[in-house]
Image 1 (tube, rainbow over the protein chains, first blue to last red):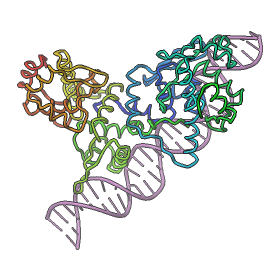
Image 2: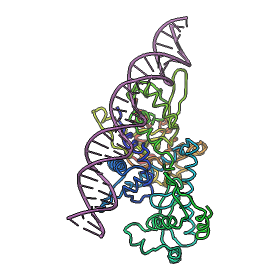
Image 3: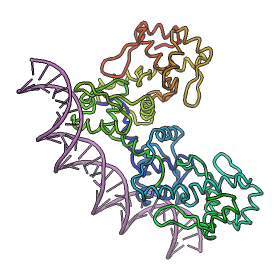
Image 4: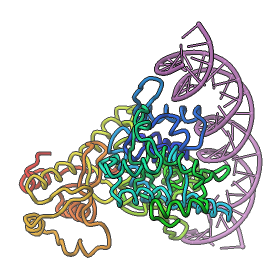
Length: 228
Length: 228
DNA sequence: TCCATATTTCGATTATAGTGGAAGTATGGA
DNA sequence: TCCATACTTCCACTATAATCGAAATATGGA
């Protein structure tokens, strides 16, 4: 009966929460591993694998195999643009309970994004380091300046050790709820673990939010001049 | 657990065969009754009613009650544009019969897309106007040049009147059969109605295709230098 | 060679959305 | 007033898709 292309087939790919989360995570245009995407969508690796296979088959996402990792990426700019136009007509997340609304507040304040910090804290830290001239922003990554190298060393972070890791050093991660980039990669990860070690932040059980301790408030003010 | 806008919620509305058929049926921009749409989607009135309620709630479709009929229509050009761009990345229609394949050909040649022209005719017109310097393409819309203003006025189109309408003036819409952008918005609509008034195109009954008349062939050649 | 990690495949379970029958409401006409 | 039409609501039924545990495969490193 229908002499139109099969919209439902593609649309149903975005019409499922886990896959929609995976796709919006991919909207930064970068490659992401299957485990990373599983974490983002808060599902097990099996489930993510199942969804990713569908997305690849549906021609929205492509894979590149490298060693034991598989790197996933949106198939092209067109897909990203369509996703974006979808975001524009999508209703804001619905808050169903008091508990949920307070959880959302916590998440907006400070949370982990895979293995680095996001939320207001993540943005503020990144902004601060840019502003102080420790980082410089490129297209899709941050560059550590000479001044920055000194800063991170004084903070107690071993840059050489981080650089030796076989992973992206300091790319920009885009979170669509904030529409701003924050620092990710080995450096983003190194910073986060450092803050945990210093006791500036602690994990909030069962959700991805992190809490800034009193010690942390002082620390972030002194080292980054931000009030949280 | 993510705090993204709810893409999945809207996308899942298009991700179901019956609803997708209903929505593409509504892409002619006209009103349709519930029973009509039930017939198009090949489901019972109950089921159609169920789906239409969801579409209205999801803000993709609006209703107008008149007597015992309910007339359904797409909520606006924005929705039509997203649908059309979805058609563009969807797998091509499966052709099961000779009749269907000739209908597909007609649609590819020239059709309405909500309230403006699409298909080869839509693309050729847009290309021609770009080439002649009447329009300039931006990221997501077309700009009418000074030369263009003169052209449209000579053609008998009142640009000021179109600009006063409370809607997007001249955005770009991704054509599913040509996989290129064509002119939409108030200007796209104005052009289409003008061609209908001039008798250059006529509607093909029961599908969205339009037919170019002999008068139209001459007119499009003279004014736009395109052979259809 | 052996173990850890990254990912997929298989199988079983569970939740949910689409479906139509039956019955209800609203409107128009005879 | 009565019936036909247009549409909706209520209520099961069913099919299917998402999910995860368990196990398999593939790669890298010790």
